[in-house]
Every structure is written in C-alpha cells, then in structure tokens.
Amino acid sequence: MPRFAKKLNSPVVHDVIFALTGVGSVLFLALASGHGAPAIAATEPPLRAGATLLGLLAAAVTMAAATMRGERGNRDEYVNQTLARSALIGMVALVLSASFWEALFADNVGPLHGLTVVAMALGAWSLGYLYTRITGTVR
Amino acid sequence: MNNRLKVLRAERNWSQAELGLRLDVSRQAVNAIETGKHDPSLPLAFRIARLFNASIEEIFNDGHE
Image (cartoon, rainbow over all chains, first blue to last red):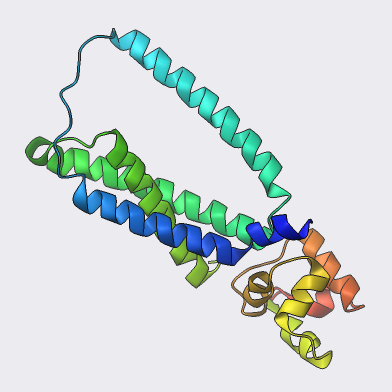
C-alpha cells in the first residue's frame, strides 16, 4: 500500500473527518432546519419526477459502488469494517428518525426537506462512527 | 474472540505501531484486535500466524474446543 494513501486512509484521518462532519451536521440541524420547507412547485407529473429520482438514485449507487471498489484496497480492514458498520447504524437511525418525525411531528412542525435529511444522514453516520470506534466492530 | 496477540507482541518488544507496520495495518487495528474489539479477517489472521510462526488456533481462541 503506498505510504501516502495509507496515511490518508488511517483511522485518525477518518476520526477527524467524522468529527467535523458530525459537528457540521449538528450545527446545520440546529441553525437551518427551523426554516420551513419551501412550497412544492407542481410542475412535474409525479411519474416523471419519480422516474427522474430513480434514475438519479441508480446513477448515484453505481458511482458510489465504483468509488468504494477502488477505495477498499487503500484502507485497512478495521477502517473498512468501522465505516461499513457505522454506515449501517446511521442508515437505520435515519430511517427510524425520519419515520418517527413523519408520524409524530410533520403535521405540526412541518415535513423534513432535502438538505435537512442530508444533514441527518451525515450526523447519524458520524454518531454511528463514534459508537463503533468506542465499542468496536464485533459487538 | 480471545487472542494472544498482546503477549506475543510483548515477547518481541514490538510496539503496536511496529506490529501494524509488519502486518500492513494501522496501529488502531492492532489495538482493536488486542482488546477484542475487532476480529481480523481470515487473510489477516493468516498473516499474523505466519509472522509469529504459529497456527491461527495457537493465537486465536473462539471459546469452542
């Protein structure tokens, strides 16, 4: 493994990245998510909007999968497992919290909008990373 | 999973960083394995066994006989 790539993918670098991401997402959620969701412009037919979203999602998944394939060789397995486990924790936490929000608060406080969901996802991944670094990849 | 990695490393007076360098993993990975927070993959377990000239079972113990 080249020394620079190894240093770039060390656990310490990931610790710093996730600390910054976590703080950034918490700040965003605290300062920006109070703004109401913008009014939805009814310009696109639902089917076309859905198809566009699915296409975008498929392209993003393909791109992310290709990136991961290349990246995996540069990281040691502990970092890989920590990232994978924390991503899983973050994803489940995001789905649960978004669902609870929709069920309990959306009517009174308003629905979640795009960037808020992104900030929630990054925050949940960062917290999952912190949890996994403390408890390990086994339990 | 229990392991004797810390003992074997101490016998050779290696630091975690030094062992990580020999195994091509990070110091944090060595620490996580030693403290039981991370189970190494099979390829890494083989590398560890080869480095210490022992079998995997002599280093790692999953609690089953």
